[in-house]
Structure formats: structure tokens, C-alpha cells
Image (cartoon, rainbow, N blue to C red; front, side):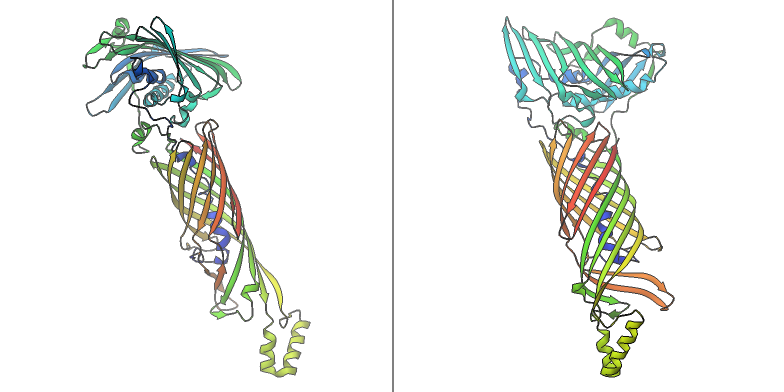
Length: 553
């Protein structure tokens, strides 16, 4: 156990400190664990079986899914107690031969509400629609119900999957969908919510999205009109949100432009309209789109968290060496023990480099209160009698006892210690998941510095393997696993220069400690940005709890 080489000074406290050093580990990035859709799309879905376009579910989530090149008009209307805010823009999407998407918002400033920066809000909404277009096939096959009404009329009902949607737009898992078809052509789609949910900061109670379709001469199905009406509350006040999407033009399979609305096409071609570029993709995580297309949920890429950890630790000893002198004959290691109480507060920042790989750095403070209960053997009596004789040795012992120093009798006494440290470290998380289950491994490398020292101690590694279960609708995770602390079986240290001794006070103490401990915890996502984690750690020689509050963006 390389536990005794963490600190340049006061390393007797290492056993308590190391567990607090991993408080950042207990801010488990469980949201990094992907959730795989339980129903992978078959070769032919229910829509193809009835001669309908397999892309119908995609169009319910995002109108941008109907073509790589399109133009559409979007009207955003928000009604609150403060009045009505209404804006109108055009969304222009194009894709080059390499698959790179260029998306812009074109608008007339006179048609934007002056009381709110709706360009930024509409950019965010457009970016969300771009992401949603990748999840249209992720509906729950087990929820599909088909009603054949006769006269070539058909109603298909289904729910979107609980597993594949990203956490910040996962409210679509509450949607119930009804598709109406007639004569082999899809006519309309209605999406309604089954329960209240949070959307873009609004508490939505009622949600309804009506989509009507048209079939082109080529047989291609496109959206004719899409209207979303949502009512609810914002900061306790009622609101009504209405978003209307009208397609203007698309490209067909032969890359020929198909104009769906001549009047709006003339308007969007006006060179006086202003343009805003919409940044669709983030740098991290790499390969995010590839993973999302497989129906795997990804957390937001960046995070910052604050963790508090408190731990109590019991340690045993097997060897005492102080300033080069072996004191085992004076202090019985097997009858001595130490108790360490440590508290830490750490700040951690992290980023998802790959969908399954997170890296982080941390900085924090640690406060340690400890007591070493040493068992004195009374061996000095034998030494005095050997040097002074039986009578002289006994007299010397009585004299020491009269002075309040009973060094000739075995006794137990406590040595209190109170130290403060600064800690820095880096770490990484690897994770995988399937349906509601996931697994992850955290590893942290840390260094500490005693407040009275200018030197940093040696490094130590802590590892946490975890298994978890995801409560999908509740957006919570139950965690079980273990915690490994790479402890040394010897603690060495230097408490600094002692003027009375004319030298540094060094020690080399053999310790008995268990490297592994059990771990159980729970993580709860609060909206799309926040999460709260609680972890409890229990082992033969230590127990602790950790509380972590995190923010992702």
C-alpha cells in the first residue's frame, strides 16, 4: 500500500485523508452511462407494412427530418400575463456533398418582438429540432396499436421510446401519437402529452401538436403544416405557447427544387432579410451523432460539481520507527490503534471527450482530526533496573511517578492531531449501458499539500467500479459497487524541524488497513442541467458519505 507517501508532512493522517480525496469520484457522472433503446428498428417497421413512409415518426418530432435541403417558415407566439410576444422567421437548411449541414435563420427585424431576444430562442429551438430529427425511429414497438377502420382508412397509435431521447429533450417520452391514413397515404398526426413536464423552462400541463401531410407526385410525403399549442406556467404565472411551421420548399430525390408555397418563397428570397448562422454541433463529445443515431442517450458535454465528503476511519499498527529508532519494545503496535475523522470540500470540472469517456480535474480542501491511541509497554523499568540495579531502578521509577511521569507501568495514552490540506487531482470515467442497466469505472489521481508545507506529497490512485439501474421516467439512477484506495502498508512522513531536537521529526509506521470498501448510492437528475448524488461507503476499517451537486451544460 503506497499510502504513506502522499504528504511531505503529517502523513500519519493519510489513512483518513485519502477517502476524502475521492469525494470528487463520488460525484459520479452516471449520466454519462448511455441508455440503449430496448427496441432496435427492424428491417421494415409498422408503417412500411401498410405501404406508408417509414419516416412518419421522424416528422412528428422534427420537420427538419423531411429533407437535407429545405426552407420553412416558423412563427413563435408566447402569451403571458405581461402580454403577447410574437415573431416570425425562416429556417434554411442545406447539406453539402460531404454531409455537412449549414443552417441559417432569415428574418425581417420588423417581424421580431422587441421585448425579447427571440432570435436566440428560435436558434435554440431550431438546434433542438435538428437534434430531434435523429430520434424519430426510436418509438416503442410494444406500444403500437393499429385500427383498420375500413374504406382504406387506418389509425396507428404509438409512444416514443423512453430510452433513446437525450435528457434535455426527453419530455417527448410522455407523448402519445395518433397517425391517420387514408387510401394508402398518411393524412395527419396528433401528438398529446400523458402527464405534465418541463420544456425550455416552462411547466407544461397541456401539449398538442397537429401535423398535416401532403404527398408529392413522386410519392414523397412532406409536411403541409405543423402547429404546436402548449399551455402551462412560468414562475407561477399562466402561459400559452404556439409554434407554427409552414414548409416553403424542399428538394426531391432527384435534387430538384419543389416549391410548396410560392408566396413565402418570394418572401424568403428578399435580399433585405437578415441572416443568423445556427451552430448545430459542439466539439464534444466526439462521435456524438454516430452514437445518438444508435438510440443512445448522451449527457450534456460539460459539467461542474461541488462535493462534500465526511469519513471515519480506524487503523491498526504493526511497527513504530521514530527518527530512525525502533520503538516497538516501548510501544506495543498490536495494542495501539488510531481513529481519523476527515472532511473534504472539492470543486470538479469535467468534459465528455467521447460518448463513453469523461475526464475531469478537481481542487479542494481537507480538514483532519485524528487521535493515535498508543499502548506504552512500561519497558523503561527493565532498562532502569538493568542500568541502576534492582533497588536503584525501583527508586528511579518512584521518582518519575512522583513527578507525574509513570513510565515504568504499562498504560494507554492518546496523541491528538489536527491538520488542514489542499488537494488537486485529475480523473477519468468509462461507462457503458444497455436498456435500464449501466456500468462505469472511475479513477482519480490526487496530490495533497499540508498548509504548513511548500511541498506536494506523492500521488495516490483511487478507483470505483459501479453497476447501476436507471429509473427512466424518474430520471434517477441506483448505484452499487466498491471503492479501492491504493494504500501503502507503511506511512512515512516528516513533521518538520524540531528546535529542541536540532533535527527533523521523521517517522516510519507500519499500518493495517483494508483497501476495499462497499459502496451504494443514488443519483437524481433535476431538469436537464442539474443533478444530485448521494453515496454511502462502508468497509472493515472505514465508512463515509458523500453529497454532490452538479451542473451540466
